[in-house]
Length: 528
Ligand code: 16G
Ligand code: ZN
Image (cartoon, rainbow, N blue to C red; front, side, top):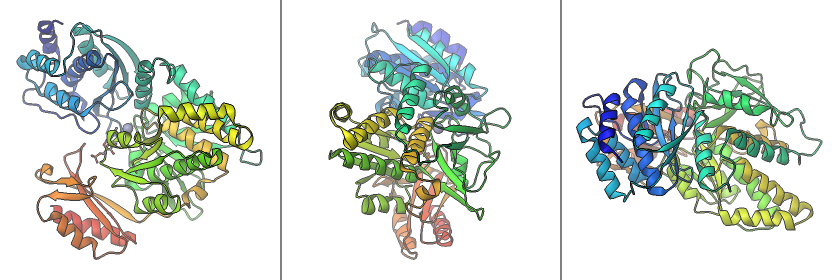
């Protein structure tokens, strides 16, 4: 490895003096103009991580639901997971190094992580539809090649598709074929197999309207729709031909404003959903006959999925451990419903997919969703093997349930939350259970809630514990929150520093919207 050559090449991707960026919850994210050096350096880091793990590593160029002028990058680890925390620190160090210190920082990472310079490296790259993404992904490739790494550029992909590719490549074909066709075929075969089981009395003209946030999800759904066109008709809105990415549309907009996206033609009681800009989040909604908007967020999705999985297991007669993983943002009603009605154990982790994903892996079957719509289900390898065997051995209703479970396992993107895969899972479950979106919504009623953003001088003065539900510092803050919460019924509130923006987030829920709004406002005053 020629660190001298790296230095020379790095000069073409010079870091603006004094610019320090941090590898946050979902990688680096900021205005696209400041990211060229970051991309080059993440290409370098991906090569080192690939050498160290002797596996393919992914680099995704996207800023998800951020405005179009932003961009970002994140690395994907061998099993399709988020980058390991110790390497996030290396990423921040490398990104912050001044030009002359680059060889030294690279050398230090190699030494600390015992990277063998002779080991081959392979990196796969994907990007979203932002105008800046193509050039930035070229800078990633520049970083990969200057360190002698091999690469494959998938071009335009959803974030979860790149996670899937990485997982496939490192699982020796067990998980699937690492091509777009492989992805489309795996998911659509599973979907078609599942929906074949729908009884004839069900709704045969199933259709769903999808707001694609003017992002990559539109392209990829178009590419895929003909594979499953018989089972489901998908109507696309905000497909990127006119509007701006994430502007007044997309899953993040719908969830945070609790209203429909612009550009969607909603008729009453029609089932609609929104993806975010890189298609790793999904939320559902409909508008009732009185024009009221109803949101079915990640919590409702987790409930639908875990109850369906539990029913299948009951039918098969297997007692496997199912766990549902949420964050502090999960609506209190969803947690209560899961624990008390469905009798499923629920766990709470810190915000950020990596935390939920790892917790979910502790169960035979782990279902995780953030309220914002990012989530999936993961199945232990032993469970997959067992279910496949049972599907062969069992007969009648038990055999049918086992076969359905095999298909639904294939339909999930187990590497990470995936709007396309989740949509197909939800559509299949609704069809199989003969549920309308209204019936699904009626499983439980969300407690009114409010989220606020507070700008503070330094958000790092707030630290939290208990999966972000309690503030440790500054002293007195938690006591003040407790006193406010006591004034309201069914109330809960917490504050946490954002991992993606320079703000503090406040969440409150209570028995009425007025109370939730007031509590959130009062809490924001004690934070300020
Ligand atoms: C990132 C996370 C998302 C989390 C959000 C929280 C991933 C892939 N994405 O978008 O899971 O909900 O950050 O943002 O981990 P916040 O820290 O600004 O509230
Ligand atoms: Zn996203």
